[in-house]
Image (cartoon, rainbow, N blue to C red; front, side, top):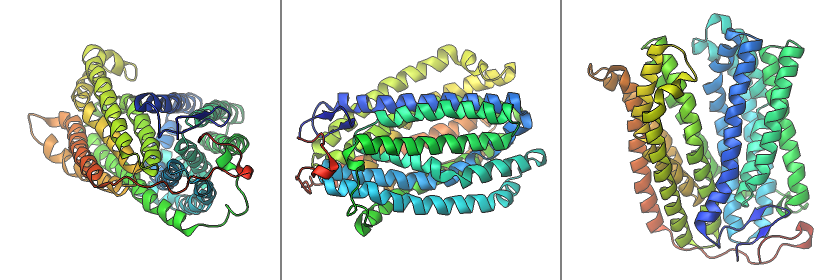
Length: 470
């Protein structure tokens, strides 16, 4: 197969051609989309805070880690479906790619509905258990019940995006992500400022915009992408694909959910140092959410790249692609290491005004930035390992981060000479331990993989249209 692109469908075959060009070209639209979404999240918070009030903003914030816990389970399964499709695509098995697309409805639909029901039902007792402030709890429950109740729309978009990326198309999800974000902001203003719906309006804006994005993305893919043109035969449940999707997706979902729990555990330690340290840590967290986007986009690109090349039996290209990832991580991390040392106070000052908090935040950012290279290694190792089907490592990854963030903060911050600085030292040590372990796992796994034989080299039938494979 050559590196051909179907211009109409945006399908890209990544089993041939320059790995660096393919991976970076694939990662760039995802990076733009992620940065756009981060900007939207900041605008969303401004609308809530300015139009509804501080309590409303706190109420929405109080549900963040809990909502992420439920969404991560469904999204992890959706990622598993995408990896399965990427492997079949690389093997040139067109029929099973279409079946992967079709069976994603059964897999993610069942899990998404279950998570919606559970999230809606446990919202009130769970938020009380987490000591949500009394003045915020009712609004928090309302927000969580609406967003969890409509989580199938959110999960649906992420699953369709995962499937498209599995076929080398990272441009289509970007288009509809931008449309969704713009629509969401417009609905926020209409529901909150125009109709006075408060927190409920923000929640409904999120659900409606995601549902619109999901349906639009599916319709667009059915028109442009041959693998989304499903026949009656393709709709039949395929137990092998469903089992494989769960086998890959469940560990990824577990990893995402345990990392969210580990962040809650670290936040508990942060709260013990008071509001000034809490404000500094919040600013650092917001900054590092943006810094991590290139790592995350590169990891997702390597996942699709590795999945396609494993299916094609091109393990040599998987190693080349990984080396591209390492070079990018080292260069980007070096730049991000220097910027906090030169402009740390100015960057933290964008988020907070208190001089003491700015000083603490600048130093905390300098500490954590020293470990960015190992953070990047986690993303590229995990992405590549997920792509070759070693999603069990994602579960081990989740356990490791959970253990580090639960066990390290108290002992480290209890050392008088370290104190509050142990918060960011804990983060750095967590990245270091997990990153080194990831590198060893990747090296070990690549030694054990034998090149696979392509499953099928027959062309797409006429009902599925044309494809990029030559």
